[in-house]
Length: 385
Image 1 (cartoon, rainbow, N blue to C red):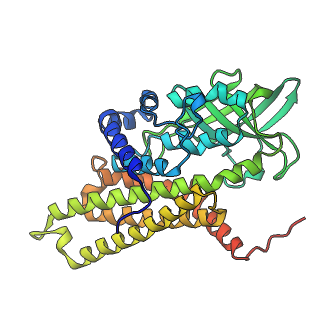
Image 2 (image 1 turned 180 degrees about the horizontal axis):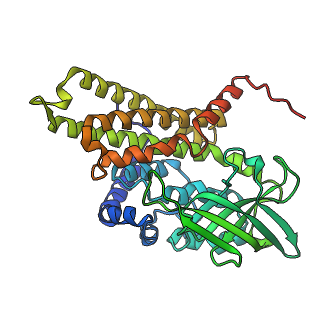
Image 3 (image 1 turned 45 degrees about the horizontal axis):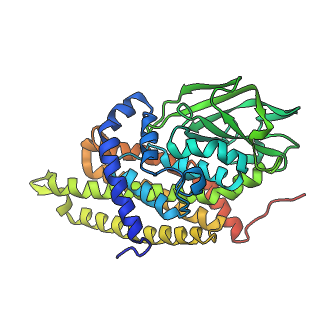
């Protein structure tokens, strides 16, 4: 079924991204995975191609194109090329849109040019050692001190943690619970700001993930993002986009895994016959193709709704849950088709299998997604003050 979501400019953008990745990323991915981090030069090269912060106003060097479909194309091509652990989408929208929605004119003038050029790489620091999806339980704290805030605490599992230059950091500035969280822009080189080791992960080997430490970091009040005390609500407002992005990644990875496994199974023979020729396997391929096509319609519709500012939290949870669970099933079956070869890291399916496992965890676990959906159905029995 033809996808009707894209227009000619998206098709041209896809070709540009595909050529860029084949030239600048694919030849280096094995090295970057061994090193545990991508070369930050890939961000600068992406900036030269106008692939970063496309939505930013032209006065800052952006293109002024606020259309999630371009991000969707970028994600699909990254996973198609086996480059899903280059976190350009996180820079562009997962973190970037916090600046887009909340930054003052002064902050935009100060930070946008570097974000657009790729000189400034973004990260977001929400998760703490004892705090994941429960944003209200954050313990990192900031205390007002004249024209600064003093920031103390720790964050963990932070994407772009080593190569990042500017982090959106959530910290408690008031009472406990949902009220009293504030977002700060913490810059590389601020005294008291340090990073831990590059955490060794199951998958996404080229994407650096680190701990961040804040030891009485003096953050200027000019680096407060949005209004003081409103951080929790800002974080919640951006979760729909984060979950849509996660769903797009899951679907792109699963589709690439299916395409690669189909080609492999036509060539690989068992008992003198192609693996794909056995009825059980043909039916498995047919089922996966059907589910991916259904999921694609759902994702494309959610993208359309998001562009129209109509994507609600429950629908974002549904698409994230469905696509991440589907990805897990598809990559598992596709690895099985490879036999022992699928367990070898030299085959793309091995990496896709490992990379896929985080999809049911980050941006909210599958269990949290089900809780959100159930509450939207009226199954909310929480006691309220």
